[in-house]
Image (cartoon, helix red, strand yellow):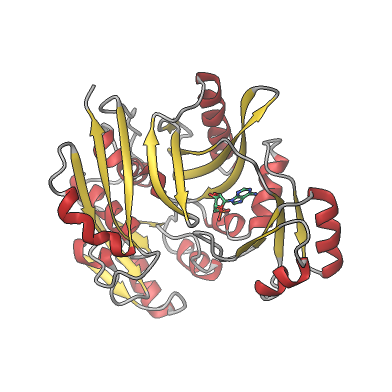
Length: 358
Ligand code: AMP
């Protein structure tokens, strides 16, 4: 168990790192952010920071020497970087988890291996595999690159009559996974925290609405049956256990109707705090960021309680940052801005959370 005054090293300097550092500060812990990007928003809120590439071993060694434990806010940390650091300081979650979640196919095989339902899928490394995949999963389908895809990047839909090979070419013929298109009723996620001693605490199931493949609104409670909510949490808990996970992870799921009853299919695992858990900062007695810091610091997890009858988190994306003047005046709304200067299209600039009183 880290003592107050200890330092947590965080790889990645975006808004997730920034919110982790703010949560750590509340608990009397320091953070050292390591990020290759000069304008990392997390640098502003920490005592120590390193701006260096992920393959700079001198900088990595110095970073490791200055912290007590290391975590990350970004899953595409090179495996070599994580291995280098893990030789010097404890890294949570274990770098093995990064390798697994950096490749969609490896991740899907893992979830499927746990007998947890996923959309039908097939690997695509060649034109013949693409044809066989279409045969197996049917159309419409979604073709996704196995690596580096996020917010809808690196994926394309294939409908009946489309030229599937052209779709694959649009993804530069990279290794892909072909997934059957899920006619989902809604999308939900479970944010789960697991401590080093194996205790798991899940936040309430969150309902997520995407716009242009980017999360727009998260709402709690989700419109799901109590049975479905229990099942969704059981699935997330099972994944966390199977990974021997320490920290917070987000599990994105599709809710489908199966013989008139709701059922879940896992879409994706995020081995980090997750955008759909931002509501917990203002809408619950403990935030996902604090839970993650508690877990990696070896502290006990808190039991999260929701405030209000409903909590709604809205992302401010790109030019929506200019709506902030409006949001600042809405009763019950908390405003979070990430300190990014350039409001590029599709960029997450901040979020607002509205807690509806009981
Ligand atoms: P992903 O990058 O896999 O998280 O996908 C981003 C979003 O695309 C999801 O949140 C869904 O809204 C949509 N999507 C992804 N895969 C599928 C699928 N197999 N069927 C239907 N919609 C999908």
